[in-house]
Length: 202
Image (cartoon, rainbow, N blue to C red):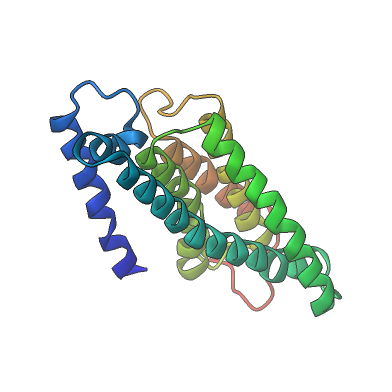
């Protein structure tokens, strides 16, 4: 992943080039294709478009399969169905692949349209793990239900603000607003519930 992240620099280079070559470009997602159309023959634009589609589908398939498996095996089974067999997990994961693909398609069509916005939206969701990790390591009073509830509140808040086009919210990034609510919910519920077995109250 660190090596893959280095390639994101080329995305920004393409965007900066488009600003110089095509001033006033309305849709940033069309930067590379617009530059290719202006600089190369039409048939080469088809090759670039096909290559772009393939390079998008391969990592998307990997991410979708990984997310579906993690949900079924590490989230759904431990919390809701500890007796699930491996075959049942596989069926749930296959169903989650379809569900996640439809959710991603919806966000791609009706929500953020730029790559940077999509990256920020993804990072805003991933950030919601931060309170659980920090409080779980350094605060003995933290409980698993409280951490899980905080994560749900954070992710739902990010989704609502993004879907209603309220990001930024009063000048604050949606991920930061959700992170604050996540911390509050985790701390309040941890203080109002019994400590996890084997952990001393702190």
